[in-house]
Image 1 (cartoon, rainbow, N blue to C red):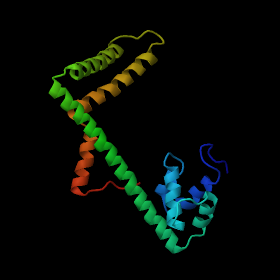
Image 2 (image 1 turned 45 degrees about the horizontal axis):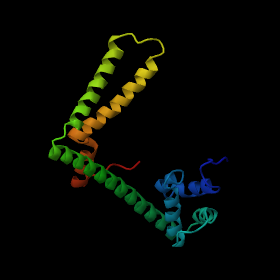
Image 3 (image 1 turned 45 degrees about the vertical axis):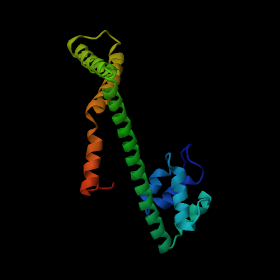
Image 4 (image 1 turned 135 degrees about the vertical axis):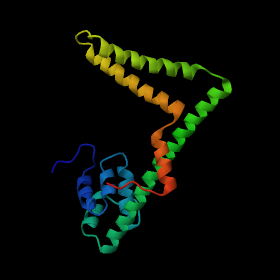
Length: 183
């Protein structure tokens, strides 16, 4: 079985051993949170962070019922930590936008409004040019790239001036106590 070049030797074995009991932790073993995932597994099984991955893989493969329950608890704690980190990131982003809006209002700065209008106008002009005119041969790719960049900037402008519906949805779910179903 060939392992990914990005993964340490033995991580594929560990991922396979953990996948049935703690799929969310196993999923993270191939990503940027791999170190945290390995530490969570080690704490659940051995009560300490610094355990070699081959030893962990063997221990998980032959884990007792208590160890599997501890691993499941560790997965739940891991999910909560990931959610909390995402909420904190959204809180910081929201504060950043609010601070920028407050600065604009306090200083009576028209620069963000003018830039926003230019970006939105550029998006619709580029879109209209692509729809109304036959583009020169070979220019379709460049216009598509420009349209994609302008669409991204347009979304940022709308989020700046009107807020993000994703953050609003998340806040509503948290306030009502409704949780999104886990995959």
